[in-house]
Amino acid sequence: MIIVIDQAERKKELEIPEGINLSLMEFLKAADYDIEASCGGIALCATCHIAVLEKEEQIPEPKEIELSMLDVLPHSETNSRLACQIRLNDIPDGMVIRIIGN
Image (tube, rainbow, N blue to C red; front, side):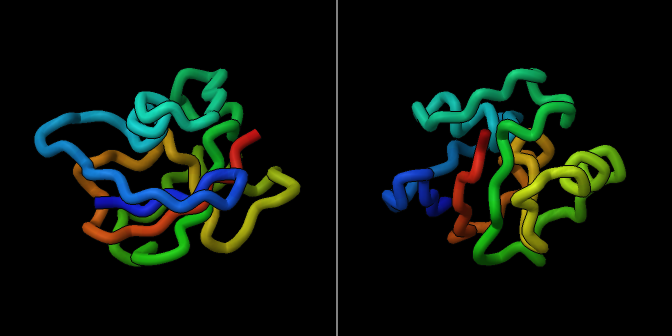
């Protein structure tokens, strides 16, 4: 289960299906969240920008390509990530994210 806070500050709990090899960005788009994802998930547009509010230390560290993109974002925070670079299989139960997006 993941807790998602959208751009309008609405909070919702979502069950993560097991055995599905999707990125968090793909999962959020499928759940009808407003995520543009114009680069298709290759860490080049940052339109899937999120903040990990809880359990950030339990997901894999960002790779260099993600860090480079986050570095140039005007609203990047220390807990910022790109949802396209986080795999569903790596998300701990109860992780809380806030969608920042475009």
